[in-house]
Length: 203
Image (cartoon, rainbow, N blue to C red; front, top):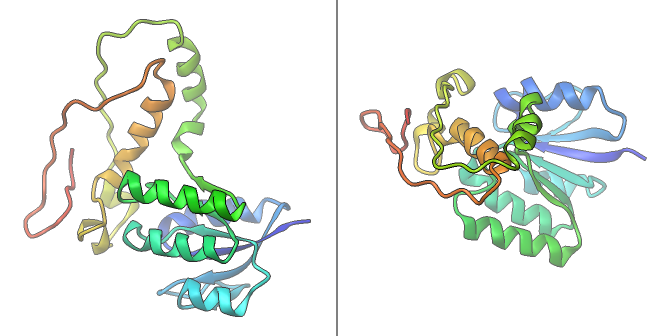
């Protein structure tokens, strides 16, 4: 039977990536959405996850695509309700925050999954296999991705908790930590902050 899914945060990424994939699958059925903006056609719409959970107790899994500042609270709420949870990347603001969510999911016997989708790009598995027996002295990452392209006109990305360039830049870190044969530790980086903003726009 198809898993009944609720989607929280119907923005650019959800509409461009999540919805087309869901439309082509028969193992998930999208039955509800929670969004502060325009409603989503064909499903029940709510202003918050709490309202969704109250009105649609039959929802079995929640995909959290809202901005990261609110994601941990929504994840805790969904886990407490016994729902499986998909976290859009980045999964949280801190490691301890994510660890606490993982512990709660284990206690509730439900799945908590972070969508490190960049790891599934066609060349990643090949690079991982090629590097498996190599000895590396150092690694330098040059990742060219425009945060304003994926979040056009969205001020939250540069507000406290929005993570700025880390939102797209974490794709690079998710790949490098997956393909290197040894644990990866970031040694240095350069960040640029726009005037009157709380998060960097370039790195």
